[in-house]
Image (tube, rainbow, N blue to C red; front, side, top):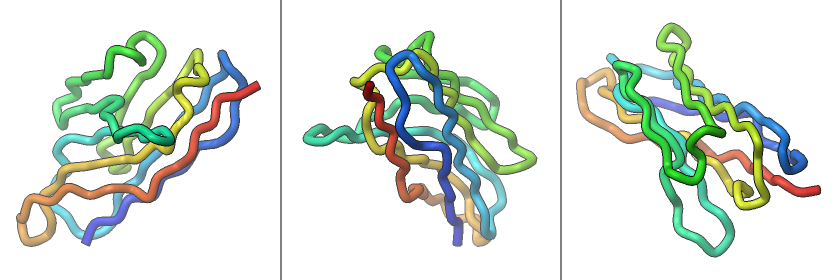
Length: 120
């Protein structure tokens, strides 16, 4: 079984920065894509950024140039550096990974979510 533990959310003023972390643990062979989603009140969950095992990244248009996704494969951890935060970035952020588990079955795993609030 694979578990994800997220950290780094909180309250920040507009223009500020936060870094989210998500660490995977448990029994698995390898992690494929790692990503961050977010869900604001009254809105659907959306993909914010993702990074493949080869390091290829993709971002939703609204965060390009402000957010950076990265991963440390040795630590099975994905990060989301968020700069120039705006009130519209306020949401619960969820980590998501695709992984082959210890039985070599494909799984998608979600973190518990971490709240990011951008407000003055």
